[in-house]
Length: 422
Ligand SMILES: *Cc1c(COP(=O)(O)O)cnc(C)c1O
Image 1: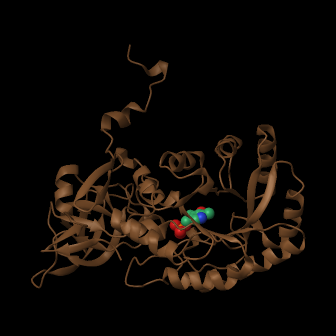
Image 2: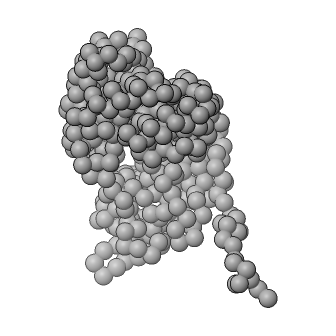
Image 3: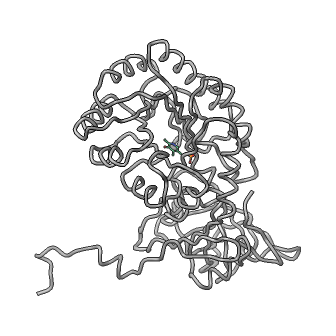
């Protein structure tokens, strides 16, 4: 459920006409809905009511400070994967005690900041990493609370580029080695073992892989406890999918049933790291039609948004519903078109032979479900400035990231002395 709906013939974001925002901000732009963010967070967290749990929003899905703050105000923690994301979470008011730090390549300076502010947990992904963390913590006179991310070797049955829980993936420690790795880490100075962590992939639309992974985690917790480790936390990662097309993934409450069946009676704090589920359907990308071009075989709708603004279709065949801002009615002609951007690559295609309402130059369209892995993955390819982000709340909106000027973009480049004008 989201708060982007047609009213009186045109698309609204909560109580605002999307067309009015477009007039003020210019296109393309990302538009997020506060009510949708809040709803998704509350539905997910609410599924674990009465259970000792912590929802750490995966900041990499959407790292705008205003988005993080909206969630932090509801009590959300944060799952971060870099010093930059850690700084964003702190700046947005997430208490350090609700921050977990994930990722395969944490560097000493990143660990040091996390230790200094006192984050809840490091999700450690390798033996070399725990050795570096031990050294950094000892030097600072701190103790790092850790879980190892284990690779449960289950098939998440999602797109290969967003599967992370197979033995062949770069993530986590092999589950066969867990006893040895925990045994050695327990002896390291500056390291306090707290839990077990797992994250098997993103956009899962089936509960079975979760169940398999969580059962494996339960076995590991029991085994590690029998080997003398005081395991009090289990981090089950993120990954629950959202509806992009007609298919409806499992609800947070059925996901919770699976999680609690596996892990519920272990007496552990349960940590979750949802990203896409919270922000995905809380955002749209609004774009304008530049040209409609009749090719030899196909019709092309050329937009002012491109793959540099929203890369999911080009990168992992991501599907986004494309709606016209003007509501189609009985007289609207629907016909197939390729919806493309202006970037000079064939990959800059949002949809092929998609049945969409007929549009003409200057019409506005919205890519639905663009709140996750949208703005955060944008680049300036083709020297296109990053598009702005707007947050709506009821009948108000604010620009929460401005469109940089081309001057600012060009100014980042510097001439070496030998090329400077004489
Ligand atoms: C990407 C990621 C998440 C969030 O995944 P979603 O599919 O957006 O819920 C959570 N935890 C880790 C470790 C991740 O890498």
